[in-house]
Structures are given as structure tokens and as C-alpha cells.
Length: 528
Ligand SMILES: *[C@@H]1O[C@H](CO)[C@@H](O)[C@H](O)[C@H]1NC(C)=O
Ligand SMILES: *[C@@H]1O[C@H](CO)[C@@H](O)[C@H](O)[C@H]1NC(C)=O
Ligand SMILES: *[C@@H]1O[C@H](CO)[C@@H](O)[C@H](O)[C@H]1NC(C)=O
Ligand SMILES: *[C@@H]1O[C@H](CO)[C@@H](O)[C@H](O)[C@H]1NC(C)=O
Ligand SMILES: *[C@@H]1O[C@H](CO)[C@@H](O)[C@H](O)[C@H]1NC(C)=O
Image: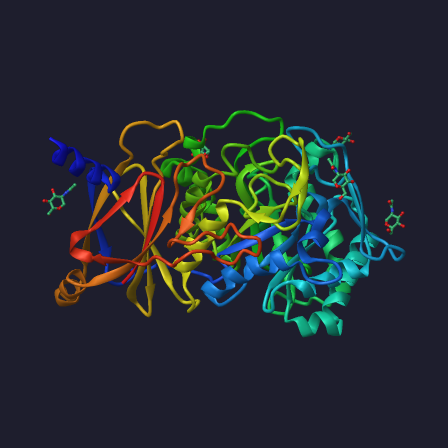
């Protein structure tokens, strides 16, 4: 009896496999597979507190290391867009040095509200030099105010900053100017009359963007700096509509090289209770992204790049118990890679100081991000669980900038999988088990056993060879989906004061013909 009892414990501590799936991996990418940009995971920053992200007198070391960790995995730092809601409340002034912000009062639903007015000077844009070398940027310009003088002043200050020797020496590059954030919401937020239409938007945008492009020296879509179009919040206005209305034939429209749309899967603007399990869902991820298929196709048909230029889990800065949890890290992996399979080049995760859905908080905070209660002492800069999702994605993306992605069909409603190819050969695969294992879950934590099969159109020999080989696996280990800390990626924690990994690197040796066990609320990356 004692011996059997002991054995059972050993098995229970190991993994209780409760189901099995067969997954077939093509040995070469099917035609039409999309490529993985090194900057697939990029960031959108709320403009009001941009200096907190960059640093003011010297670079923000926490921001720098958090971004450099990602850059080391792909060979290029994430792209940075600065703009969003505060983009249309920003005014340039010759008498302001960096910025002066006016904030509304905080409350428990929105502990860190956006500034209602941001006045900036030239040095504000020059802080771009503090980002990692090689960062490509998009800067937003105010369309909401419908003030051509101000829009032109902002454009001149942006291009002037990128011509200074300090910014040039930093290797940070200006790629795109975006004129107006979520203009399809202007009729709801008072920036335009409530009966404003897309037919009125197009000439309005042209009337402001033409002098902006002129002032910025932007002449076409192939120049060093070009224009990002659309940046719509919902599909009230669509890329196809503005194309049909002739935006691309206008002088500034001819400089549009990229179309951006925004997406949140829910909204916490008035609070609410969102089940984490609604996010840890393959069906919900696909439901939220496939709505863009027609917009992506229309954009690509015009020879333009398509990005999700601002996105995250839940609008209005995220919801507690969802956006700030380990489960959201798994959502991030599936959401980003799913977007890549649809032809989205980059996914710009929106971040603001104190927002619940941030990958990281770059400055110390003296109010709780969850309910606004005072924090004494303040909490130091730190990463949040979704940061680990970015580590997994960027390891999957790899360094060549030429990898191709396919989604692997998996007959399990909780398990998502993707394969990456280098030079036409299978290089990596990632599996995510979205089944939520919560702090309240009881019994045995379920696990799925994944049996791999390698499908080759031409050479069965290559498949046989791969099948009998070993591979290396890295695991994203999570105690509970609703945890807000304590994750481990390949054995290491990044929850350190300087975002440098702590702990021994754990690489698992995998015998491919034995398959992989993947517990609920876990991800594994396999390198062949
Ligand atoms: C996986 O494939 C094997 C061999 O073809 C088969 O015996 C097994 O039933 C399959 N398992 C599942 C879960 O489909
Ligand atoms: C437009 O912006 C300019 C420059 O900031 C400012 O002087 C002017 O008052 C603004 N016009 C309106 C109508 O607000
Ligand atoms: C929108 O409403 C304004 C009054 O607020 C009116 O003058 C204008 O004609 C309306 N435009 C359209 C297209 O209905
Ligand atoms: C989008 O995601 C949310 C949260 O995951 C989910 O509740 C909603 O049903 C999804 N929408 C679609 C159309 O699938
Ligand atoms: C937090 O710090 C800011 C200055 O950085 C200060 O104005 C504010 O009063 C502080 N709030 C609390 C709750 O300590």
C-alpha cells in the first residue's frame, strides 16, 4: 500500500494526461503562407506621458532593457507608435520645452486617465533618441482640432527632431506620420458633429494632411517618411470605403504606404465584469480577428501594408482579472500569431502609464492600476504577465526576418498551434493550451498529449528522419491563469528590477516520436 501511494503521487506531480491530439506539421510552408516581421510585436504608446517611457534627461533604463530583450530575440527592436487618444488633444507651442499635460481626476475604474490637453515643445519629440538603436517610429498628429496651423506646427517639430544630430546619432528612425486617431469616433466624442460621415472624413483628412505632408517634405509612399492611413477604431469607417472615396488619389493619399486599424475585444470604459475564460478561447480570438479579412484584402490589393496599429485585450486601459493576468499572456500569443496568419504585418499593443493591460510599467506608480487606491511605498517599474507572451512570440519569430508562418489545424477547442519555416524548412512550432486552470480549480490539472506527425508532399525520407530526431523545447510555465505574477519562461523569471532574466535556463530535450505533454494554461515552443 505505501509503495503504490508513493507512485501515484509521483505521477500526479508529473502530468495527468486527460486527452490526446494528433498534429500534422507540413515540412515546408504551404503556398501563400505569410512572412513573420521581426517587429510583429510592436507598441503603441499613449502620447500624454511619452516622456515617462523614453526618459527625459537620460534614457529610461527599464524601457530600454524591456525592449532590448525583445530585440535580442528577433534582431530588431519593436516599432513604436506614439499617439492614440491624446494625439487629437495635442498642441505644439513655441514656449513649452517638453510637455505640459492637463489631467482629469482619477477614479477607481480609470486610475490613470488620459490627459485632456497636451501642450508640447520641440524637445518632446527629440526624446525619441532614448529608444533602442534601430527603433522605427510612427508619430501622431492632431486631426481632431481641425486646425491646420497646429497640425503643421506638429509635423515641423517632428521632422525637425529627427534631423537633429542627437536623434540621427541614436539610430532611431521616423517611418510614418499618422493624422488623426480613431476619426470614426469623432462623431461620438464631440470632435465632429454627430452626423459626420466617412464622405466628410475623406476631404477633411485631405485638407489637413496635404499641408502636413508638404511641411514634412513627404512626397510619396516610397520616401523615407510616409503616411499611415485610416487608424480607425471600429469598422464604422473601413479602408475599403476610403479607397472607394478616392483618398489614395489625393496628393497626401498618394503618400499612404500603410493602413492601420484598431481592435479591442471588449471595453472597460464604464467598468464591468469580464470572465478571463472568454479571452482564453480559440474561437473568440478568431472571431475578433477574422472580421478584418476583407479590410486586409482591400489593403493588400492596393499594394499597401496592413497593421493593427493599436490593439490590446480590453479598451479603456484593460480590465482587472483579465488584462493583467497570466491567461492574457497566452491570449497574446494566440492573438498575435493568428493576426500574422491573416496577413497583419505588425500588432501594436497599446500601452499607457498605469494601464492594466501593459506589457510593462516603465516608471514607479503610487496608485493601484486596479482600483486607484494609494500605494505607499510606490511600486517600482515592473513587467506584467503579457510581457512573457512577447518573449514566446519573438522566440518563435526568430532572427532572419524571413520566417513564414502557418497555423496548424488542431482538433481541440483549447489548443492552438503554429509552425515557423526558415528557408522553406520547418524550424519551430509553438503550442498554446488556452484551457483555464484557475486558482479556484480543483482536482488534477488536465493536460493534453500532442502527437506529432510530419507531412511531406515530396520526400517521406525527410519526415522519417525528423520524426526519429530530438528537438529542444522551452515552456511558459504558469501556476494559475488568474495569477498576476510568478510566470517562468524556459525556467527563468523576468520579474526583476532591471528586466534581466533570473534563474537557470531550462531547455527540455524532446523525443519527437514520443510527442509533448501540454498542461492547461501553458505554452511550449519547439525548435527542430
Ligand atoms: C492518432 O493517430 C494514430 C495513428 O494514426 C491513431 O491510432 C490515433 O487514434 C490517433 N489519435 C487521435 C486522438 O486521433
Ligand atoms: C489653431 O492653432 C494655432 C496655433 O496653435 C492657434 O494660434 C489658433 O488659435 C488655433 N485656432 C483655433 C481656431 O483654435
Ligand atoms: C449635420 O447637422 C448639422 C446641424 O448640426 C446640419 O447643419 C448639417 O446639414 C447636417 N449634415 C448632414 C449631412 O445631414
Ligand atoms: C471577441 O473576444 C471577446 C473576449 O474574448 C469575446 O467575448 C467575443 O465573443 C469575441 N467576439 C467574437 C466576434 O468572437
Ligand atoms: C503620486 O505622485 C505624484 C507626483 O509624482 C503626486 O502628485 C501625487 O500626489 C502622488 N499620489 C499619491 C497617492 O501619493
